Image (cartoon, rainbow, N blue to C red; front, side, top):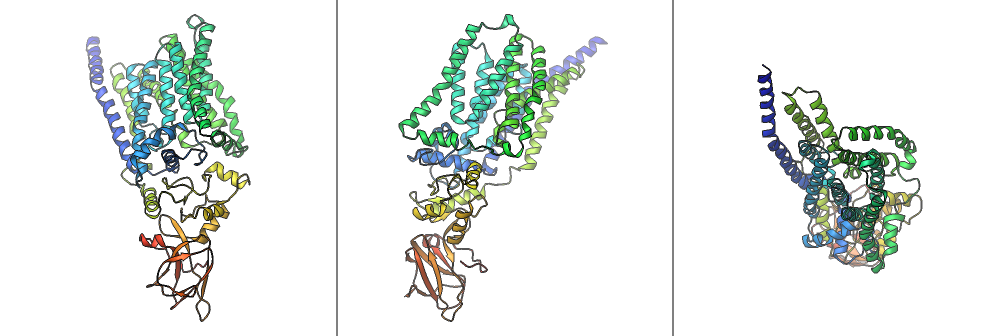
Length: 566
């Protein structure tokens, strides 16, 4: 009887081992296919065109920070500039450029597998990678075209290099180079470096003295890593200095973002308590991982990865002023990795030998199914949510030439320069509200003769918003120069109006064709109007609009709001 039971258990394990690689492969292929669908249909985040606008600027000789404002580190934009130039000016540029994020997604998952395989059994590593592929905080956020995708990939690859083998001088230098590139991609790397430093100390603490390297050797490895870390940032600094843009670089990446009382620092200062409260939990988790490891070396590596992820999350949630969805991209695969292996180990510990293989395989499968269902419910990939962005860029390309300006919040028009230097993101708006930055939007629009502006949004400063409301008309995806003419209140039906940006304008009637006299001359079509007061005397009563002539010529018409006067 025992032999029969043992045989059945062996047969069950064999069947599980036979089908498991195919199930993992199916999950990974399914995740990749689902990702392609999301690349084409997932809603466009405002950061995506902002990153594209900066890369477009580089591709057309505009220096980041000096001529194109940005408050991100520059490496991602510099690397993407040639590809943006190759893709060209097309309305669906965001969707096309999202495909450039696919190699970074694959690279992040490959690094996740290498890390998992260095810490846990190969079976756990395979399933951890499949779970990470669909992990909340990673899958949807990294679908977007953003610098955080490169940032996460470089960080995970650096961790993979650390745990893959003995930390020689050459390996330490390579890790430093990768982390330096990570820093040149996002200054949030300071959080990652702080976490890695604390994690390294924790790994050293759990390593038996007999297994530790000498202090001299350790100092040499640290020095090699620091030397590698400085390479890419030094090249970036020297490059911007050669372009006479060092001061703008410092302002855009550091000074602009360093705002006292920003975000959560002001709103929830009590969250700092998370730091001391988390120390015992992190310590217990690190010791448990080290004690259950097959060797001291593996225990140290497990501790390193666990603390690198845990300390980062604690610092992010407890001390960082602005917490966004994309901040979780570099750590979500590590959380998925650790949680998957821990879950499989617990299931194995409480399962009978006969069912152990099936139950341990079921645990990550359930996690994958739940994660997929949650995504499908929150953002169905069969629903195209990209139309607004595509329509806006298409309208801008129809209405403007490359040498014209377009006013938007953060660069949504992608392919056109902005008349107002600062992008209207959270920190800029905080600075505007505190009076630390000027709302010079009206003057900038006039100085650059900007004919096209974005739709009315709350994010636009009050002074600039009022100016655009008075001098631009809604034509659908954007607004263009124009205004509704006031209704006549005399027998002569005279309509006086102001033009603030000189240009070629047409007069449209809500019903039929506009006819009458413009500035005392019979109106027979669009004409040039200088800045100042003008007068239109129509032949008949109607509602009339003054509109930038190119909008009329390209088929756009204003939405008449008969209850509004200017």
